[in-house]
Length: 179
Image (cartoon, rainbow, N blue to C red; front, side, top):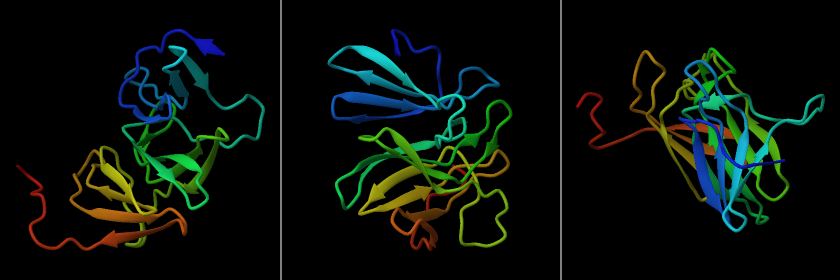
């Protein structure tokens, strides 16, 4: 289904891949989030909307906003859009620490790390939003963010092959928590 206009949307993520702009999630109002994937085709100058099919067992992330988005190519040459963290939920959101991969060729989602609100150990990051992320050599790095009560000054790595988190011990001068 082709849509000519994308409605008001904020706190979403996006990336360029080939000749398309991929925009995922975001807020549609002050109390509603989206789980729609919009794709803008620069050649056709048009938008296409993707979402979970009704009554299907298709795997699809929950609605989310203020999350991160990065591109990743695995060892087999498959390109993925990696989304992580953010506010989770259709209407009243909680923070998340989940990680999803969208296969840009097959148009399918895969959950790499399920939302884990209970952080009883120090081996996974506290759910959050507003963090900075980057992928280097198959590892997703995440720095900072907040959970509405506190701001984080920590760094984590997530191995995209083993799907395991590891906290990085920062040394030297660390970004000040209060500026």
